[in-house]
Image (cartoon, rainbow, N blue to C red; front, top):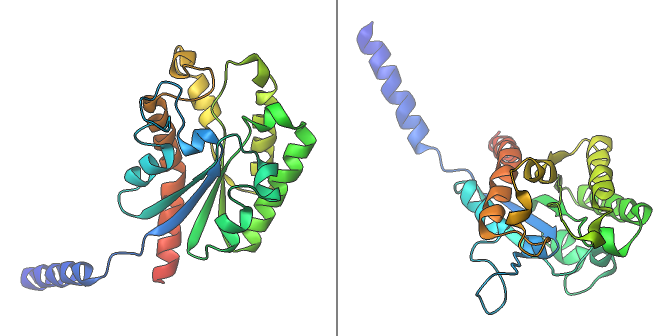
Length: 222
């Protein structure tokens, strides 16, 4: 009996080893300069941190995903819809390999548009992404201590409400960062994170996205 149990264990292990590794899920992260990775204290020629959040997110997903960075400085949800350096079609419609779309807008929207315009643009991004067969994840923007972003909490609340309405996963970075002691010190210009804060945001994003990646890979395997 013991030999049979041991033999079964060996066969199970061999079967597991013979299975090919799941194909990595492709993730497109769209957003503003905080997605792109801008830092006011960076010594790089382009002002970018060494490891932007999407790159750190890929590392945190340990080979299960490929993360593409579609962050554009000063962009908003409306700018992406209307088309600029990068258009919505560039990110979603023309990238059939993308399985998950992460949307991070709010910081510039709070400066440039009213709340109703923001909600309208976000609804369009969500609907278009889902119509294209993508899984949508909303990511709260990081907080800001700039007076010009005083309305940002309203935009975060609007995003949270949209996540509930559309039954979407939500990365609660705004709340997580606000809970950090002296969080303002991690935003040297009151807007863009330090490298350490970008890494924290990526870690929080991975907590939400990892189960979705696993679900997509399990579905593909079945």
